[in-house]
Amino acid sequence: MPEHRYAQSLEEMANFDDILSMSGLEFMQAIIDGDLPGAPIGKTMGFLPTHAEHGSVTFEGAPEFGVLNPIRTVHGGWYGTVLDSCMACAVQSTLAVGQIYTTLEYKINILRSIPVGMKVRAVGKVQHVGRSTGIANGEIRGIEDGKLYATGSTTCIVMAGPKR
Image (cartoon, rainbow, N blue to C red; front, side):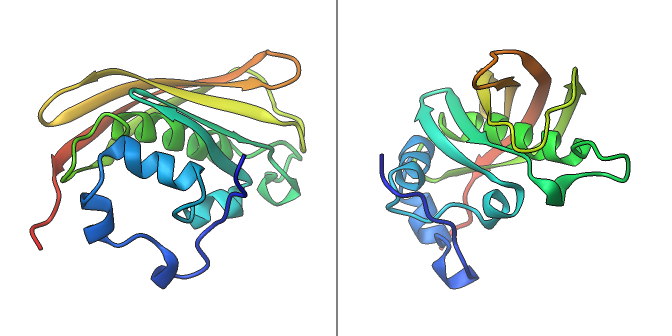
């Protein structure tokens, strides 16, 4: 598996010309393959994309000390960020060359606390993508124990990319 890298500056991130020249699946695969750097949020939050196919994207990671809330548990924002990433990228994996998306809304349900440092897998799966919206569901499961830790759903706006 190639070495994953994260963008360290805006200049390192893919520009719109690059993004719009690929299908959404090609773009995700380029990040997973290390041809393009991943988003810096992944480094900040401790996760990365590991697999993409049409309609499904997987992220893996582990919450670390920096994402704890005042009561010593993983902050709900960590669950939300990982789920938003895998679900929205699942929608992206269905997009044609020249299309982009953004999250309109998402919802999460936290079922149990993830211990600090525990490796998890978050899988987003598309339910529907049309001309203007995409809907996906996601779940976070422990890699070793297989337990379900959280679920989510999202609605994304699908649109033509900016004209260059």
